[in-house]
Image 1: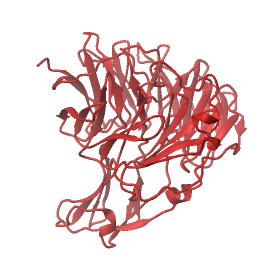
Image 2: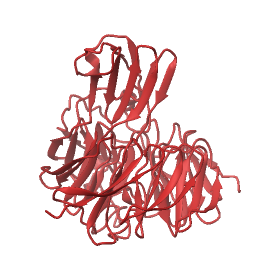
Image 3: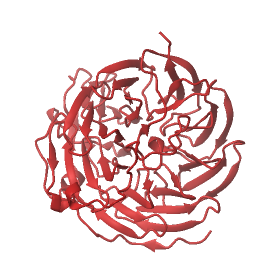
Image 4: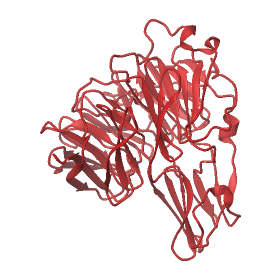
Length: 496
């Protein structure tokens, strides 16, 4: 394997300054001056992500959902398929041997999913029958990617390529430190980020690393690739635009208020089984839950903008100039907690969230709600509360308490035992005027124009993956989603 060339970060531009505070419940945006990169400042003739579909777009094929959030631009938009819009029924369920953390992908009538223990599964999209499984032997929380008859699976320190038809390994490579991000495939390369703080471009056929680019912190989120540019977000909440061929940086977006996002903040977690549900700041010290920097942001590229979404806020960046166009808070400005420690035990959880962009509207999940914003102005169009998200303390078993924070479930017992699980919410996805999101133990479908609920379907276990929405071989729309007990569901319209 050819050693990668290493390129250190270069700061070529700054995200507009200014701390946005006091915003709550998805209310409020900050629109930047044209001189700082708004549309009037010029986006070029062909801004990245510009398409009739208004999303990053793949081939626009109704039967394809090939990578994290659907396509290489992480658009979360399926322009060609119709998902179930009335009441739904379960067509089938498939049981993996471990929890599903990365989302399912669907190509050519096959659903591909990877369980937490690193086993890759191929499942018939119509019947739920297993076609093959391949144990990589590495823990994985990444969504696989499928391109040109190959399934790419990231986990541990390895990127593995598997033949999509037979389940046989084609190759594996070790691009760098622990590979955390979901892989993105574009123009014959596979792009992944790692825990050491680098993004790698790997030749999809030869498995050689073409280039690597180093940043300041872990890269957990799937790179977005469109129009010859790779967009990544690191654990310092800095976003980078890199030339897809060479890895050279085009521009870097660093919020001047990111210290507010990076700083550690500790609060107490009680172990009183009778504790009332409330916000973390209302409780006195006992255990410690600590906010840490981490890549819970990821990039979505559409219509000449890069959208950087997290569990509580969203930025819209001009993809050409690098200037900030608007910013909005998704929920109450409370801490997000990414690790929990007690008695010397500590475990971190990182599940990057992405915005979805469709028909000039941006959809994001945060503050226990799904929010819709005008993609050009950042004006909030609607906000719909959903169960299973947000920050709260819940009573646990005797002598313990459960702490749930923005889609991450963490439990401590008085004996010092630490358990970490994953709760909703997932990133939202959009198909044919409907927004689909997993939250708590429920999959929810909302009207994309109004935010009104179209249906809710409980699955009996925490939804741990972002849904995939495609047309099935039978011709109807289906939602595929995975849960924390390792169950993969196919949900379709029940015909009533």
